[in-house]
Length: 250
Image (cartoon, rainbow, N blue to C red; front, top):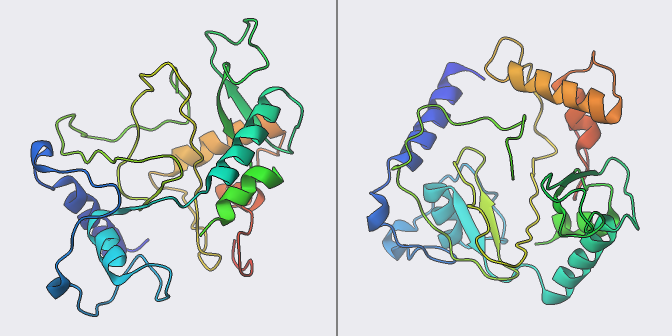
């Protein structure tokens, strides 16, 4: 990435962090009201020129880095995804490459093959039922977790109000996350990462991302037995799956 692009990305991140104090922010389930005077034709960087999003939605995403779409997933689909998740927990289905992560505090209890133990399933792209979600219009410390340098807990935050079936889209540079589940019930969510089929991988050797590449290769070798002489591009080529269109670079 050249200095100009890197500088532009840094300005976006700082812009997101430099919002008003948290007490001045009001959560809204979809998007804020945008003045029609500000909806003049412009060059959007992060959305495509099609009829999927309104001009107001594109403007909000451009300025804020996230967008909530209400009721994107139907109740019927949610029931199907939940059923598939429960089958995986009971080991009735074993999709290729799927990684099941369990709560170590109860992993050896009488619930060892139920959803009470499973905290997360990862790399579900080969499960046909769960992957269908991608096509729709942690307890303990994770070795793959990387903190945010110089992050201050009192930085401004926006708390999103979401309901069953809602979907939120984040810009990859926007710092985001969720707190722990404080209820007695389950809180299930599906997380997908999208990229254009026309984008390409860059060589991360000598950059801040090189340490992540080494961790990914090490984990892939340990869990999947892949050769250790691969690079990050090889891993993502293996893990990626086409959602729509034609697979080009990736």
